[in-house]
Length: 185
Image (tube, rainbow, N blue to C red):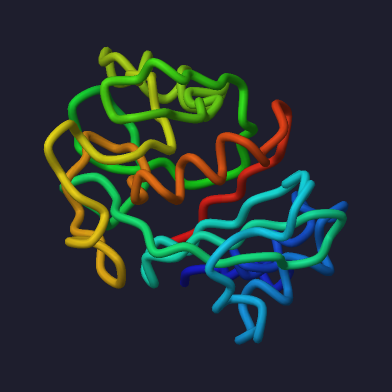
């Protein structure tokens, strides 16, 4: 007879615990908000946390635990599931941080995400594969116009999070290095 663990916590609850310093913001990220229709961030906004809901293709950004804007996003070519290996075209899931900014990116500008973490590397090593890296939030490739992607961004990256060039300009100016980013299915 199979034993079940009655103390198993739902995955969403575990994420909330991990993201406890942002719990208020995280819970509100799952609810509709009038702030999601802003065309531009308020002046001098400092974004200190980000929640990506992959299944909805949206990214919520927060300043001091307050939702300030929601962006439409595109993901890796294989958007369902967690990133495990280099070249799997998946976008990671879990808690990471923004660890870099690059104004000279091939994709307009980008913000680096701290993937892979120790757990990601251990898993990939166990499978005798590379975990990959260089996962970013970035703009569009040269020659593509924002107007094509205003309300729907296709899944086209190698595992990164894609936004319009206008959006990455805004994020680049406002997201602080060290900001937490939670990516959930």
